[in-house]
Image (cartoon, rainbow, N blue to C red; front, side, top):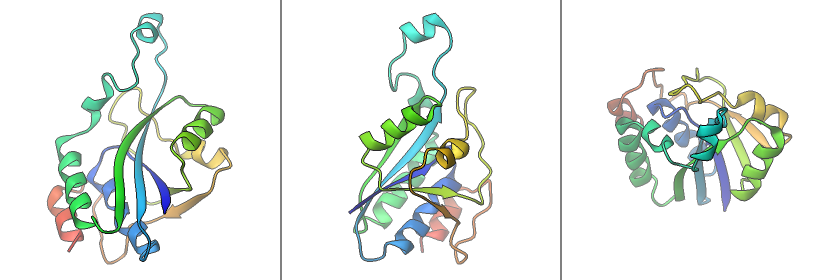
Length: 161
């Protein structure tokens, strides 16, 4: 069983990459971790009151939650575990430690996705992924499942049929 990491900005489009992951591993159960990268707080007060998932759960949109459940139900036989994790930091060593803690086997790096940061602390982890010397695969949405950059739940429903 493989543990696969997919960076996310909590858009419906980022959920669409699960179709490609399942197509790449047709006869194997996988664990998929959606990772959202956040900068560490820079003020002393924010550091003192910092807890791992304190205010960041609010970044997950209702549409993302609904789409997440659709994906979980659609691929229940192929996906053993589907979860969201927040990575706090911006150094290679911190990122490698995060990957080791999550037992990640491979990172799926979307190459046809414009990252839209949902908060001021969010950032696109693509450069960090490329520099960390960890196995990654560039991934695209399946050609048979086109999805607009501003995809909606209905697009995800159509893509799962």
